[in-house]
Length: 216
Ligand code: URA
Image (tube, rainbow, N blue to C red):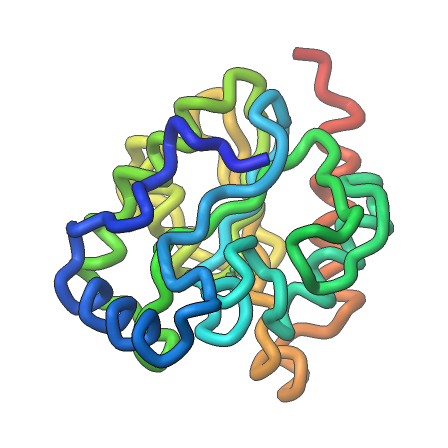
């Protein structure tokens, strides 16, 4: 279920370059979502997973974060393995995959050309990340997938980036929340061995232990 209160509208006008790219793909592929991809999951969840941005032929096509993107295969399987989802992930938004205690979002909600959002676009879209954080009353942990997600989450939580350096498996306590960093589960990172499934699972294991021992 989308967390609609904190999501941009389908025709969000805030980033001209991303609007132009979106229009180009609406013309080329009218059946695709080609719009900001809403967050997916449980508003009352204690965990928020923050990715980078929708992939052109993945989340931008299907309209659900990490769905149709190579990165989603590892992400959703790992969520299933650690009890953060149930059902079956079939790379389409009407499959039975259901997040448990978790929502999934992106630092930038629209697909950027070449998968590279600009600094301005990341800053502009942070208003929606902040909104998502604000609409999750029970939030305790964030998994930041990659440095851009990490930096944006840190700033969305009111902290300075310089005080919190990204590092795989690093944990940052900010206010009442903990941010857990992971290298992004992209095809590039997994193919090059920057991130192995074991390294990714280690982060989810840390978060599982944290939430299971959390008394609040
Ligand atoms: N798909 C997403 O939705 N986000 C990412 O970061 C990568 C792929």
